[in-house]
Image 1: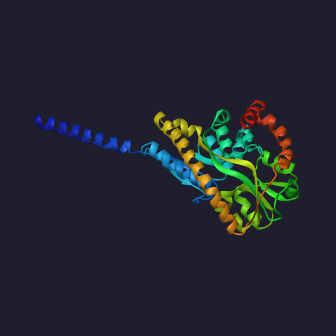
Image 2: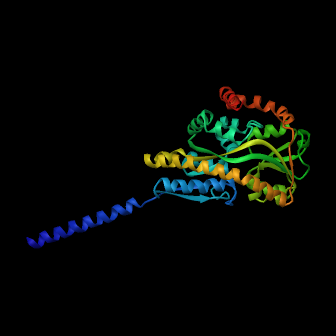
Image 3: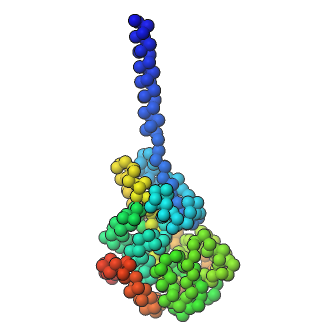
Length: 333
């Protein structure tokens, strides 16, 4: 009897020991979020800066329970492919150019309207306010949760034909544009030849002369070495480039409530840090581009450009939504 009891006691002790050693193992399990973007992982690339800031903030806010793995340079696919994956739940998260998000939810076209925002501070105020909240709600119905609008900076024109000082200088020049109707409409209204093209094909197309140039934020020019294949940089500031930090709604909804809160708070703090870095880098990047041999000019009179693109606002009012467009225009007045 004593021997039987001892065996049972030993079995219970071993079972308890197994249970208590398993608990720490379970507690140490991490949720892995794979975050992708299509540009470089350079020190001043705005997408990469945002990704690193988000990784740091999430891992701190979650107490190490979430690990963010970073995948630059199209490792998770082009932007549209990543968005499609997020809707299916096969891609976790990404930092995506706003114009590509607009292919999924057309109301996001309002952010890309040409010459809409006067400066970065105005754009941030609008996107962090009711307009941005309404856009986020619309995107969530498509299976993607918007965490924040990070900053790519204003977009400018680069090409190998001539500097751009007036709308007439755009005429006849072949510009790569994103596969987004607002950008196609903008360059068409200015008389340019808009060539929709995936980002991964663009550098080679410029290098080989298949296109004359493109429109792009300063930091992305520098980090992706477009100064090696284009001659003229014109500071047109035609579109504020929001870069959208997004996560699959399926992935987000599977997280425990406390980790969902950690992700949201981390997105806010990371965006604040990313925007500050983008502002600090802007002057240094421009100096580097000039030093690399690009011929830089600032557009002195924006009014003729604004007049040339007014038809774009009317063209996209139905897809943006008349009420949302008017609310945005009121906010920037």
